[in-house]
Every structure is written in structure tokens, then in C-alpha cells.
Image 1 (tube, helix red, strand yellow):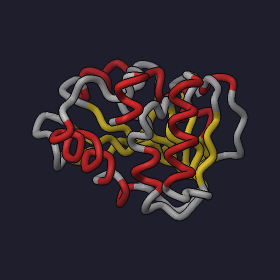
Image 2: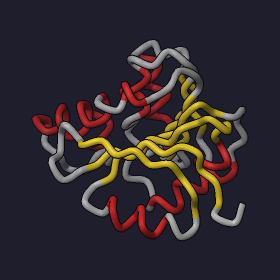
Image 3: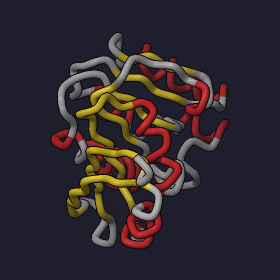
Image 4: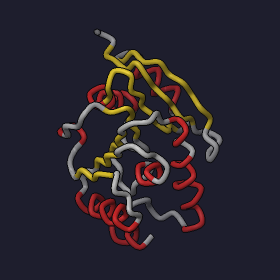
Length: 175
């Protein structure tokens, strides 16, 4: 909340909603991730990346192009002793990482854009886990015109209208 006042990490949400709207919403994703290295695209306030780092043992890459938010992420990782987390103050479309077991992003971009990044960053058996709101069906329909994927859906435990997508076998329709 201290950093939020200066650089608007999560908007003007009251402290009471921080726990359910952001922390628990991120934590509920943890069981969906396979072991191995993962990335959070557009990490911003560290949601879900830092929250997941508290329970995920593999290397975690937080990708955030806004240098002020990247500075927050570095400080949060330092304070929480998250030595398995690396903060990358760069754009996702320019980053080069070893192939990952999983990627995630929360409120970063439409699904079609996320799949482009996921396809580039994931190893062949990797999965992408994206929390989505009411637009999940529309985004899946649009994305299926450009991307092949196996999609699993999970109901959010923190928001009745939200869906968590777990996507695998991601590849362009043309391949």
C-alpha cells in the first residue's frame, strides 16, 4: 500500500479488498502450475508472480517494462527473501529466456496477444495460466481463429464471474 500511493500498483482499492481481490485471487492459481521455471508477464504489483513465488519452488521470472514497478518488484522480493525470483525490467516481446514450464499474466492483454507471448516462451509441454473475467468466452473464440490450444477452465474461488484458463499445446493455426 505504501508503494501504491506513489506509483499506482493496484489502483485505489481499499486495504480490505487487497486480500481477496488480489492476494487470494493470485494464490488460487498455484495448484494449476507444473513444477519448473515460470514467468509472470506484465508483473506490475507482483500479482500473481510474487504471490505464487511464496509457494512455487522453481525459478520465477517477473517481466515488467515499467521501471518504477520493476523497482517495487525488486524491493518486494528482497523483503520477502525470494531468491528464486528474477525481475526483468524489459518488454516481454524483447526478453530472451530459457524455455519455461509455465507462464501467467493477470490483467495484461487480450488472450490472442498473451498466446503469442506464451508460444514464444513456453517449452513444448508448457502451460499458460490466465485468469480472465466475463470476457473469457469471447476471448477464447477470437483466439481460436489464430491459435490452436487445449483449454481447461476452472471457476474462480474469489470472483463468481471470473474464469481461470489453463492452456496447453499452444501453436499458431497455420502450423
